[in-house]
Amino acid sequence: MDNSGATEPVRARLVRAALDCFLADDYHRVTTRLIAERAHANVSMIRYYFGNKEGLYEEMIRETLNPMLTVLDGPMLASTAGFTDFLRLYYETMTARPEFPKLILKVLALNQGPGRRFIQQLLERGRTRGARKVSALKAQGQIASDIDPDILRLAFVSLAMTPILLKEIFEEQMGRPMDAGFLETLAAFNGHLFLAGLAPCTSK
Image 1 (cartoon, rainbow, N blue to C red):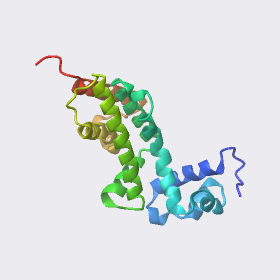
Image 2 (tube, rainbow, N blue to C red; image 1 turned 135 degrees about the horizontal axis):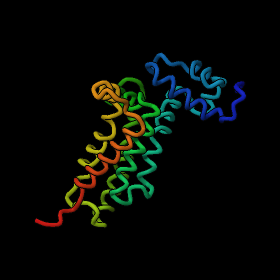
Image 3 (cartoon, rainbow, N blue to C red; image 1 turned 90 degrees about the horizontal axis):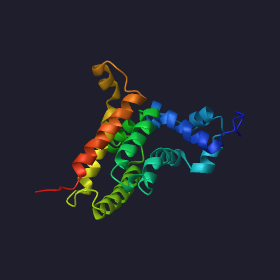
Image 4 (spheres, rainbow, N blue to C red; image 1 turned 180 degrees about the vertical axis):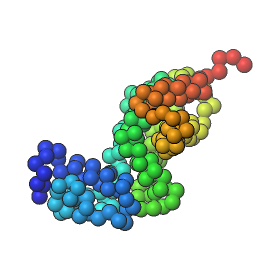
């Protein structure tokens, strides 16, 4: 039973606590009791909402990635100018949880912890939605007709993930923080790169 007196729903507190715990330690070392204690909830609530620890783990990943997957169904990428906004959203989301991309990388590249197939399914959904957006932009003449959607996707992921994954190294090398202002400028610059690289050729 919740004894925190907080107004945040217990389900949301469990997801937030799971994110804190799984980012701080390896999957097998995190217990449902630890998550429940951090969320000021009864461990039975994990079984009630998520079935088990793995179900909670998957929901934690889904809720963190969903804002960016939802964008692929919305108006943000109705024009190429939206790439800047999408990069900005990614930087903002991941700056709040800089360990999250590393967690995804560990699961996918090193197969540490459960959820590899689940994460791949989420990413495939993003790939399918992104391909539809690319087709629409081609049909509207906003991007070159020979753009390979998989190449575009890999380029975008590289520009999005690398600054967050290597944030501490870059900050040390530059001698300045990659704060909100820096990331805003980076999003605008990378968005400009996309606009230039995707533009249809106007002359031979």
